Image 1: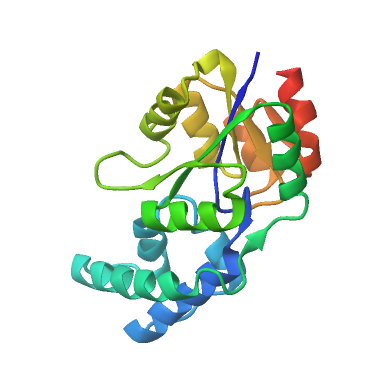
Image 2 (image 1 turned 60 degrees about the vertical axis):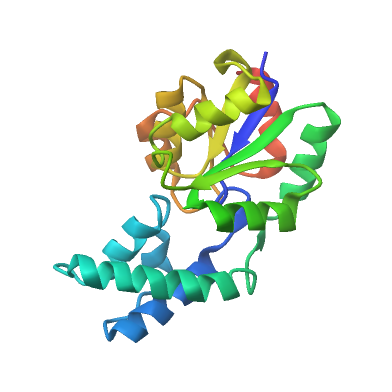
Length: 216
């Protein structure tokens, strides 16, 4: 029986896309290269800031340029990551329902660990106290390490745990960790992508999560 829900953050609990796009384009402008639309950035996020910036910069950019751009992006994002970011509609109600039923909850994200912890505390502190982001000492998703470590901290086993996310990386992460994935359609990827990777269930709105979990 499922008693533990581990969430992705960007595109799952929080709509961060506008702030991410603003910081990407701030960095692009500083580097003197073309800017990106919000839809272009949508398809770049989910694999860590390194992947995001590598995709955002022109092909053939040097390692030095990538590293410099990452620094510019992270400095700007640190000061601007709450400008437009907010929970998706229905997220607070969903978390309240899970808490009322006694589910253990956590976040595992490819966003930098400091940003992840700060945003989870700010927006979801009354529901979620365990949050893990990308850091030097743990491989990023889709490696299962961060999910497995979180399960250990929570005292949960794989048969008791579900991972909830919006991207192919999330489905792959869940599979690698030996847990089912519930894919959500309000985030950064579409239904075809989630189905192709083998999500155990796909939901169109947060209020449907509890029902989906109970059917696993």
